[in-house]
Image (cartoon, rainbow, N blue to C red; front, side, top):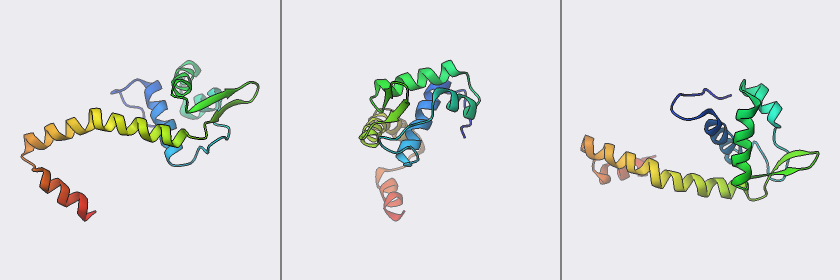
Length: 118
């Protein structure tokens, strides 16, 4: 399911995995999402690590806890995840791309031409 890397804490990688499940519409709005135990077993990680990821998803208001029923996906989860990922892209990824383009002598016009052709 996930190939964990050393570049980011495992719980953050689980949050990223959950966000991808949401954007891919594997986890559907207002439906139950896998429990901490289910995700822990499927991913082969400690339940505390998964719990930390679920707490972050709760803080993001992407999932909600239903007493006795586990977690369910918020109706607007996809929109929230998309906004969050866009902010991260603009704040972190794009500046790295700009630095690398400058270092390699790639002009913005060259990049635009490539993007338009795809």
